[in-house]
Length: 215
Picture 1: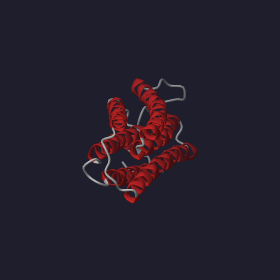
Picture 2: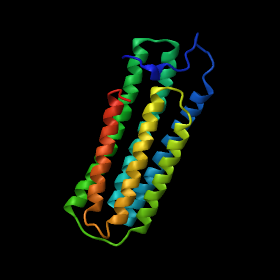
Picture 3: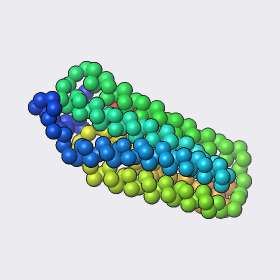
């Protein structure tokens, strides 16, 4: 695998050298993102069932799958640190494997959004504004926006940083689309369906970029 300038990070002269503090901080944020996404995702699944919002339910499933993908971003970052010490074909393949696992989890989230879109297309109807569902999605926007801020200020030049920042950007937009869909649905029949299509497309694009080593 060709290592671009994004891989040129924390080059060590010998094994056991000190890790860049920014890199340690970034991996801590990635680990926190894993826990936060799984926790909030599980909460969203329950809230989606309780409020009757398939948009919240689908985004909750999306967030749980994202928790795994963020764990893979952290694993990618750790593998990159090993590659910077000893550049072997095995280490290179390990980085690519972690990125593809992350992409697979992102794709699972895209399927959840796609299912939500199909469900609302088949059962198109106007409904009262679902305030609990809207509150949950606005919380997801706040969470993803905060994680994006934290990651963006920890640029260590790694591929894991690029993957994670792009991921949080897309997730912030997807959560915003879900919130807008819930807000518009009382007045625009099928708003949830359109929102689901956009969210699925954005997540599918993200999975493709992550799996194919594109910045």
